[in-house]
Image (cartoon, rainbow, N blue to C red; front, side, top):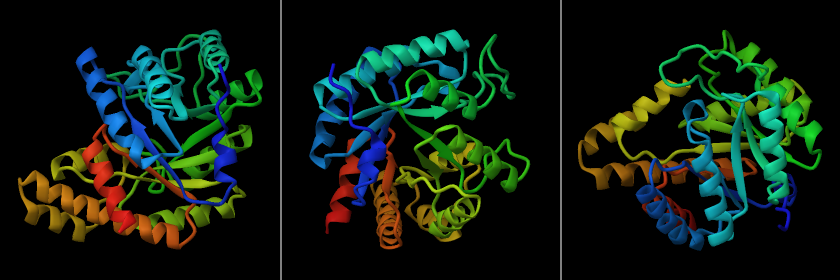
Length: 292
């Protein structure tokens, strides 16, 4: 199997890098729907796509299935997510070997969330505690892996301070991370401040902004509560005025995302990563808006 192009190499071209995130469906019907979504999104020609691992590593088999589908049927460069959750060191090495043999060279490297129903992260038996540990393990196992890591512009919910959170991010970078993708945010000033803070800590790798087009006020409030992000009052007001009309809400969400992305690119962001919730319509509308 031909090896994928490292994302770090794509980022080094200095052009706008565009990527999409998929999550593994729960059943075969969902996989078929995702197949159709992916086919529709080929017209966007993303530089790469990522596939999440699921809360508590619960979708690891589906992650492999969807990654293979996106890679072989659509020709996307695929970056599977991998977490520490539910894996021993030996199991993680085995997963790394399987991915490498299959030609994958890019992995989104995360500690992962506690399994459903648990509030505290507890390392698996002979497993890893931190994302930086996983970065080090993967780089030791296969030095040619290109590893992405997550960054939280408004602080990881579990971190006791923004300063400590930046220390943890620096450890992941020092362990061998190649680029950072941020958690979602809706105020670009948050991203610019985060980048400045990272650079002041000696973090020099690319920091890709993660953008989520809003599909509903209820949904986005739930997401932001989970990840510690904030919603600007102006955006909340617009969504409240849109009320329960999905098409109007999506229009508001896409217009906000388009404005964000244009401003980010104008200020030197290396590209953008879209959290599209497996929805082709929103991503295509956003691409059309950016092309206007």
